[in-house]
Image 1 (cartoon, one colour):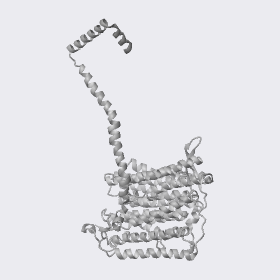
Image 2 (tube, one colour):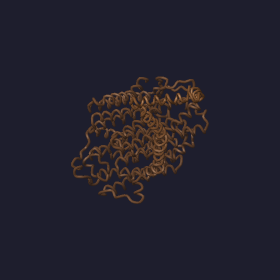
Image 3 (cartoon, one colour):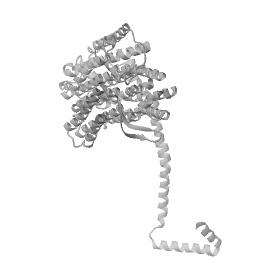
Image 4 (cartoon, helix red, strand yellow):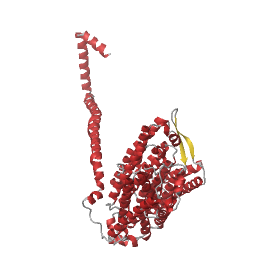
Length: 636
C-alpha cells in the first residue's frame, strides 16, 4: 500500500517536472503523452487501491517521515487511505485524465513551450489535490490546499499577456487567502488544545474539547471551505476564473479545487456532528448561496458564466447536505456533479472551439445539426443536473433534499425552488445554444464542425457516467441499495434520524421532479423560438449584472484598500521613509561636492592655504596658549 500511494501521488508530480523543465524541447505529442500517461497510471493505481478496500482491506495510515518533530508537537508526513479518500482518488484521477485527454486537442493552437507549460500546471494541479485528500492530518491537507490555490492562480492567468486574466487570477488567489487564514487558525487552535492535528488523534479526543472550542474550530474550518468552495461572501472569484482555458474550468469546477471544502468538512464529520451551531451556519450559507447564484445564472449570456454560477449553486446544495448531517449525500453529489459538470464544461469548450472562441450564447443557436455528439452529450448533462430520473443528479440531489425536509421543511422548500431555477437556466442555455436558428456570422457558420475524437471521447464517457452514475446510491424507497452509503459507512458516521415514510418520500420526489420538468418545458418552448435574447431590464438587468456584488466589493473594500495602499506608497513610503533616507544621501552628496572644491589641483592655492594655516596656528600659540591647550584637550 505504501508504494501504491507513493506512485499515485508522485507520477503527476513527475509529469509536472519533466514537462516543466523541458518545455522548450518537447513536441505536442510527447508533452501530451507524458501528461496523460502519468494521470492514467495514477488512475489505474487508484482503482487498485479502491478495489482492495472494497474487498475488505483495512484502512490504514502510511507514514513516510517526520514533517514536524519537537518535544511538544509531532506531525508526520503521512497518508491516510480509507474509503473516503479512495473515492476521491478515483474522481480526481479519472475526471482529471479525461480533461487531460480533451486538452491535448483543445490547446493545440498554443506554441509548443506554452503547450508544455499548460500540461505541467495541469499535472501539478492533480498532484496537489491528491496530496490534499490523502494527507493523514490537517497540516498535509493544508499543503495540498495551498497547492491547488497556487495552480488555480497559474492556470486562470495562463494567458498572462491579458491584464484582465491576470486580475482574475489575482482575485482568485487573494480571496482564497482569506479563507485559508480561517483554516490556519483552526489548525493552530487544534494544536493548542490537543497537541497535534492528526485526524485519528483529533477525532478520538473530541470529548476533551469544550463546546466553545469545537464551535470555534468548526467555524474557522468552514471559513476555509467557504473560500475554496466559493460560498457567500467568498464566491465571486469562481465566475471570474473562467478567464482560464475551458478545460481548466472543468478541472476546477468538477474534480479538484472547489470540492476541497466539501471533502474537508466530510472528513471532519465527527467535529461537525458535535457542533450544532456551526451546522446551522453551514445550512444558512449553503442555501443562500444556492439560491442567490441560481438567480444570477438565469440572466447570464456567457456560456461559461452560466455554468460557473451553476457550480456555485450546486456547491451550496452540497453544503446544505453537510449542514443537515447528510454527509454521504453531500459526497454523493460531489461525485455526480463531477460527472455532469465536467461534461457540461467540456461540451461548452467544444462549442467555443467550433465558434472560434465565441462565448456569447446570443450569437449561437441551431448548433444541434452541426455538432451532433456535443449536442446529445450536452443535453444529457443538462438533464442530469436538473435532477430528472433516472439520471445521476436525481439521486444525489433528492437525497440531500430528503435530509433537508427531515431537518426542516423550509429547507426543503427553498431547495426545491433552487432546483427549479437550475432546470430553467440550464435549458435556457441548451435551447439558446443548440435549438432554433443560427445567429452568428456567415463565416462562423461556414466553419462549424464537430470536435476531434480526443475531445468527443471524454464527452461520451462523461455522458455515460452522468446517466448511470447515480445507481450507486438508489434509495430503499425505490427498491434499491445505497452502495455508496455502505462503502463510506466506516468513515462517515451518519447522524441519528427518523426515516421518512415511503409515501412522504414519493411525494417529495414527485414534487421536485414535477417542478423541474415544468421549468424545463417552459425554458425550451420560450428560448428555442426566440431569434435572440432580449435585452434585460428592471430586475433582469440587476441579475445580468450579478446583483452588483462586484461593484459593492470594489466600492467598500477594494477601492478603500487601494487608496490606503496608495497613501502608504506615496506619502508614508516615498515621501516619508524614502524621503528621509534619500534626503540624507542628497545632503551628503551636496556636502561632498562643496568640500571637493578645495581640491582644485592648483599649487599656488595649496601654498596659500598652508601659509594661512601656519599663521593661524602661530597666532593661537603666541597670543593665547590656553586656546591651544583647550583645542588639544578637546580634540585629542
